[in-house]
Amino acid sequence: MTVNKFIRKLLNLKELVVCGFDLNERKRHLLIFVKPYKNGCRCPECDRRCKIIHQSKLYRLWRDLPVYGCQVELCYRPREIVCPTHGRIQENIPWADNYSRITYRFEFAMLIYCQIMTQKAAAQMLHIAQSTLSDLLHRSIERIRDGHRIRDLKAVGVDEISYCKGHKYATIVYDIKKACVVWVGKGKGEKTIDRFFKEMLSDYQKREIKWATCDMSQAYINSIENHCPNVTLILDRFHIVKKLNEAVDEVRKEQWREASGDERKALKGLRWLLYRHSSKRSKKDSSILNALRKGNRRIHRAWILKDEFEHFWDFKARWAADRFIKRWTTTALKSRLEPIRRFVKTIREHMHRILPYVETRMTNAIAEGLNRIIKIVKNRASGFRTLEAFTDLIFLTVGDVNIPEQIPKNFRTI
Ligand SMILES: [Zn+2]
Image (cartoon, rainbow, N blue to C red):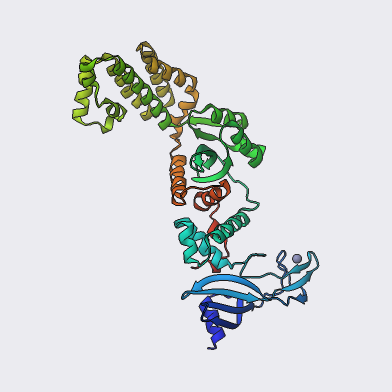
């Protein structure tokens, strides 16, 4: 086997032929002279074989993966061709994208590394500067996502996230069915989501959206219901429970403020106890709460109401859930507890957005889970200064396109 053939086998790429190499031992720099195998002088647009008219005098370099601590670069003088359809154009380079300075294999490694580690670590492994890496990453992700359209969106979830040390906000739209992010937009509130519906979806796609989940923010509700005529909005279960817990806590706080020294002792440590779900309560907890019946009637009443409300989530039939919630709200209104009454008001207002939960069992849990991954990405990078850099990584880790999969198949090795 000749050395050139050996190197080609080592590179494990069928698309190119090795014509020579040059190793600079002092700089640990390996240059490999290559040329396209067989399918050279093809048009990059239509893949037609065309006439060569010019070969560049200058060598172009493509960065490849480092080997044995050596920087590796592929070296070739690209030719110009004339395509009957596309005119004078540079021939197709099989190992890299047009105008790219790195090979597909390098690109693939970069994308995979950036999914699992910090950009600093990835830059070290690839022997390049961190600023170069983020630049290359941005270009690569932009190229791969270019012209991408949202497809088959049936259930959406909306959430917001802060970046730039919590000074700025971005709104994230999720595909709940596929568990991925479809859009990231600057800012928060109704106008931002309006932008998503206007820019990203056609009227047909908007009609196709059947379900949406979000928290109780009026901005989200308005925007989603305005744009999607067939949507069933389902308010997130956990946000409703949180609202009720807050109401109960407010009752506790009121009582705490009014209580004297001795009475306060009895109310100590109640806060987290009241938050706890009934299934996670120990016997001791229950006895403390039962003692409240004599100790503080108002907190006890609030707690009983909260416990009763938990049953709502177990209903399977809509009519039964409907009957239950009507009875519950009537009782709760009679409780003479102002925070609870306010909660009831919200519930009544959003009744048609809460009841569908019984049939669909849909929550914002997937969106919240994805949000958690996004936060991990954010913390790993110790924050992002620009939304573009943040968006890149969001799409790379939880986007609707599997970005590394878009690299040609036989280059997907590290
Ligand atoms: Zn062509």
